[in-house]
Length: 239
Image 1 (cartoon, rainbow, N blue to C red):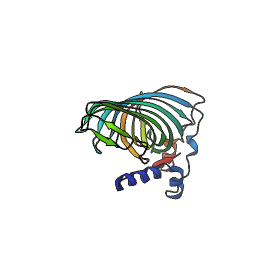
Image 2: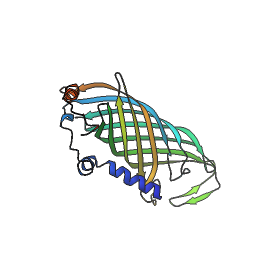
Image 3: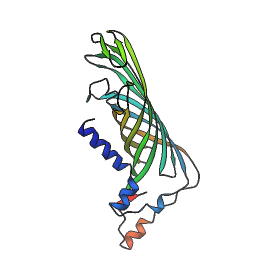
Image 4: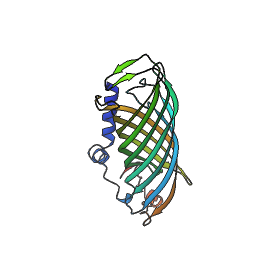
């Protein structure tokens, strides 16, 4: 793992401890108006840009894919997202060609910050991923640790489980919302490999709430009334 990857890992860990940050570093306490009993279901989709499989493909080459997802949000803070990402077939010259890859993700999200009185919210991500990768070997015959028969022109398939860790944001408008996420995927494609970063992925897309179950959310304080009294609203709210 390089220095940059280690730094990114610790930055993500930092963002996964939002309540401790809010109280110890910024002096904010959780927002008492953010709790309600509404369960919201949504669907979305977008583009995913990923390094796909850094154990085999050249590090730093970004590939495009398509992402679809279904999500449920519990009491604003906790959420669950199931998603599928299809990577556009590509090559990893000079060793591999005709590469097909896809990911099945199940992530737990923790909403921890809203910006001002906008509907922009930030959340941490942790979860699991089942990754599929298939490519045709183009190089000369080679030995490689757990697989000893790489032959030119032969297709090889790798399937593995990995752990997701990242952060994201969402913002809702009148009829739809937009979202963006950054995730590291940790795993190994060879049995003899160490547990390390297999993939770095950025996803951007749109989403729409389908329906809700439960009570109406608690309304935020009357900002217009506060302004008339000279009370300045907080710029950030920590849930």
